[in-house]
Amino acid sequence: MNAAPSGADRPGLLACQTAVVRILPKLNGSLLVRTDFSSDDVWLRACAAVAQESEEGFRAYVELISDPAFDGASWQAVQHAVPKNNHGASVLFIADREALATPDYPLLAVGIGHNRREPPFRCIAAHLWSVDNNLNISNMDWRDFTGATDENDIYRGFTPLVRRPRPRST
Image (tube, rainbow, N blue to C red; front, side, top):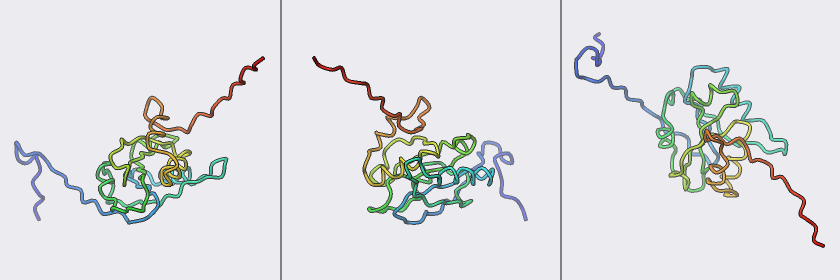
């Protein structure tokens, strides 16, 4: 059996790779889609970090998707694989190579539904619950989170407000 020709076999022909990306399940909650399959242990640690409750008792309600069909997929391809659902989540999370290579797991938050055109940002796993909970119930808006990202476009939680004593009027 002969191998398919590659760009190296034929001058002037670029090697092409086509990825077949499956359609993700139609669910009402958010998805956390794995696109980096270099380490199962790191993936499991990232999932455990996402599952941790906050000090206030909040947690993310995400469906974990670990399907090798998404290995190396771009965020745009994963976003496109989400079926339309007028009553579903408004955010999708992606565990890509960058997220899984960093200890605090800065997962990519991608808008879906009415947030589809919003720019993606990263969110550390420990604060994914805040993005998931607040965007999906429309308690907060996409810009509330993008406006609270650091210089690397990573959301690390809201900085607590420091209440300054008001001067007493005399």
